[in-house]
Length: 395
Image 1 (cartoon, helix red, strand yellow):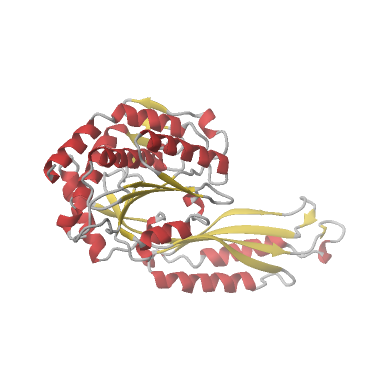
Image 2 (tube, rainbow, N blue to C red; image 1 turned 180 degrees about the vertical axis):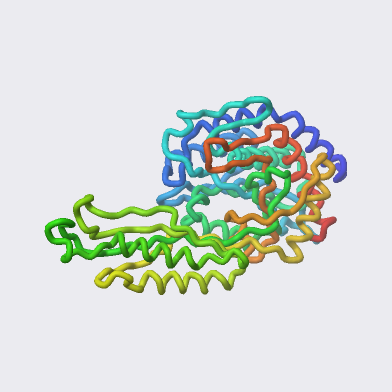
């Protein structure tokens, strides 16, 4: 079978799969799966394994202790020169977890209105998972991939991949290319660059005292929190793409007690890798300083993303994808995103990476999150065409 005939068969088959895709998507969206809900995230994994089993695709489960297990679905592909199947893997990546609390799918289940689908995680990124599943199935059915395909389905991206990162990086070190199927941008674009991010928490210890009868004996952790927040926010430098946000705070014992403890959670975003250490050093200094005498504080990093940067190989990968997308009727541009993703980890270890190749959607992490249903098949076809043309693109 020639490459052109394989492409025609794969894209024609994908064109018949929209209803099947929507059926899988509805089931997936209606399954709970917040990052800390291991059982729910693994239930989505069971759905993926069931799909792969029906299509003859073997799946390796990499157990994770606290968050969703990692799944590796493999479809064998093109032989290396001189025989054998030693080509590096073409990775299709996606995460199964969402940001939503338990019970969210029951409160607002999957629904469609006028070609738009809604529901928790519908775009970020369950539609991308479904797309990857069907692209894997298409190559399993018709062959033709210029190397083994590896579908990597992780379970904790929304909290910085604390358990998934080592699996992602190990997979990427052996990858030829990585396509991350985060949602396509509302413009229809894909993502060629992303910010890095560090998520940390600082805990403050003060001293309790009655706020009326013994005020002067107290040391307010909440006052210290307020002053640290001001100092941390002052590190924001929009010109350099550096932002600081203390997005969650807590503390205190009662309204009539000088607060004995307080906590703030910090979101740092940056563009240049060198900026990470500079700003984190300044945050450490702020946390170590006692603005209110007698307070003590400690800083803990809870999660981290690396920036997605483009090199010559990933630029060629983008051009290959853009040309493939054009044949699906899609005019695709590369965009920079302030959001973080697992694609930063794959790029950092040297794998040519393209992000946001999934179906188009928007308003992620909100009740208004949506998916443009009509983009599911064309984006799947574009991905398949790009895979088939990797040799031609020199990637």
